[in-house]
Image (cartoon, rainbow, N blue to C red; front, side, top):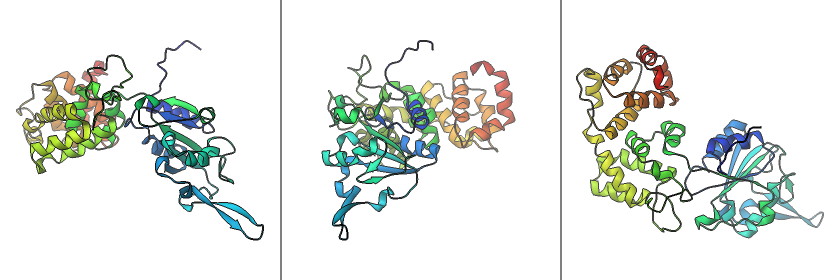
Length: 354
């Protein structure tokens, strides 16, 4: 095997591939807050065709997992699992022990036998094909994560890389109805998702940093939350918008995002673009171009895509490539794009952009 340089961490996609290919191993996902570790559970369960069982370990008590019940005939006790989890059913389960490293010791001890084979909950052996995943943050994040050595020796730890903003857009945002303004801002502000563990982060006032206590910070999770606030901004004042964003993504992120999205409110209306594609004004600022590209992905359909391409051909090549690449990765829009004669003609003339 050729020598490959690594940085000791994997992407979310790589983690999914590893877990699905090695279901007997218990993988422990570790990464900074809000980067998408928990969201992987649904993806893995669907890929393995298993029932997902999500357990928020810090909020569990031992009795939430199961209780010992007396058997008066044998004068012994028997473990009765909580019906909610489905451990008593003889079917493969995809069990996600979220924030396992923040749980109470008694709860972690109760769950400990499920980390290895044969997997057990109390005295109950669960289906041997079940998959178990644990997750938590780095101990250096300063949010209370502890894993003892005997537990650590039972799992395969997978440090998860913070996604780049472009990865977040391509792999998650375009599939989850994030507003164009927020996607465009993220693309133009790549430092928002960088890890405090990366080099030269002292001046990064967007991301999470345990050395810089703050009420809010930018992460894939919080920026997704900001999208909802931005979407409904016509219902409240600019002051309310800024205040809500500060409480979601922090001071620096909120101020930058508001300044950025104000450009979106000055863009040529979509209706005018489609009605007059050869004469409607074309934005000159790169930020406005990005917003328009992401917005078009959400709005195209079989009826208007031809008119959109008439307008698009008047725009800089950067806008054209951003739109086509993003639309091609959107499961709801890629069929509209690929079935369009306008796109086929454009792709033939601009193959070098791919």
